[in-house]
Amino acid sequence: MTHIINCTPHDVNIINEAGAVITFPKSGVVPRLKQETQIVGNLNGIPVTETVFGETQELPAPVEGVFLIVSRLVMSANQNRQDLLVPNDVVRDESGNIIGCRSFARN
Image (cartoon, rainbow, N blue to C red):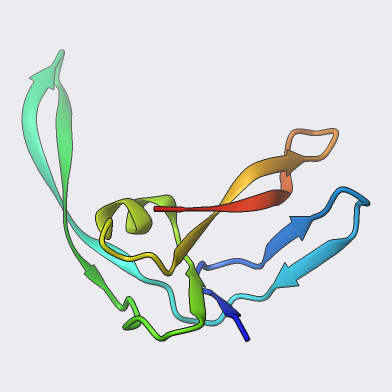
C-alpha cells in the first residue's frame, strides 16, 4: 500500500472532481534547502541580493511505497528522487486564497 507523508508546514487539501476534500495533515518534518544571501550590488542606495541554495536539510531517506509532499524548491533540488510530490493545479476561493489542489506533480 502506498503511504503519503506531508512534509510541508501546512495541511495539504486535495479536492476531487466531486468537490470532496482529502486532507494530508502536516507531519512536523519540513525539509528545507540551506541558503545564503549575498549582496551583489547596489541600486540607488538599496542593496541588491542574490540567494544561493545549498544542500537539502531534514529530507527523510526514500522508503519503498512512501511518497513525501514537499515544496517545489526541495523537489527541484532533488531531481534524482522519484518519491517527492508537490501540490499542483491549485484551487482558490472567491477571494483568491488557495484552499487546496486537484493533483500532485513529481520529478
